[in-house]
Length: 352
Image (cartoon, rainbow, N blue to C red; front, side):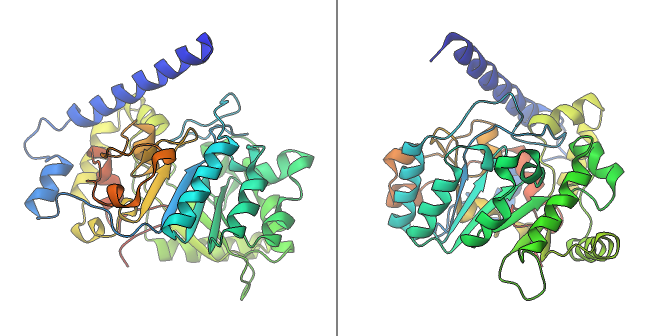
């Protein structure tokens, strides 16, 4: 590894350690605010353990054409981490071995990995029922080489899930950068044009809403209705579902909370909104997260905090279904974000 890359990796590890210390020690010296671990123990919900593996969520690289304020991956144009074909093949082998029905591709902008299309094609060959790509939409219009992505997605029946902070230009650009809203609208129209998101279409197009500030998301069903009404009336744009996701206090969002002096209030809000019913359906129970270099995590939030799975098996190349099924899921204070209110997962709320 080159000296520059090694130094960068050391800085990332140091930052992950710093963030874990903040989450672990922060305001939780106050006895009125229990740790997430003690909260689960009180309710006889500890330890958290995995169910049947259904979803393999794979981060194919941190490179992105955007630098979003809420991004928990710290993705951007300067990130060079990219998953190799060897690691992708190991992921495909695991899917064949386990029968996991969903391959969830994330980034950065996953489409920027040079092997992205090969990976999608191979996944469909091994019988994955649902290939998800978490697209930022703007990548479709960012460069001519990506303009045909809607057609590629359609050919392989890819399930497109896209971030859309708001149906107005100001709020969207504030979170994701100038010009993002207009580029997103253009991309959504391109997806609609090939059938994505249209009524009764099996080409799934879902949107993701993240709050733009230090507060929890509103009711998911109400937000979906508002989004559908506004996007249809203003732009004649259609989509299927809206997923509301709570911003977890890690990476850029944690830095924002600290800089804006909202960290303590936000953590209080998460703790006070804790919902025991959400614990049983948190995504880490049926999902494994794979980093761009093949390490295994209970979720992609743990990935950013360098909390690898608590198991003798920690890399995709050594995957052992039986051994990993016996692990205890790693938790910390950020897990309050997934269990606040109606709960939060990459597929939206977990409590109906």
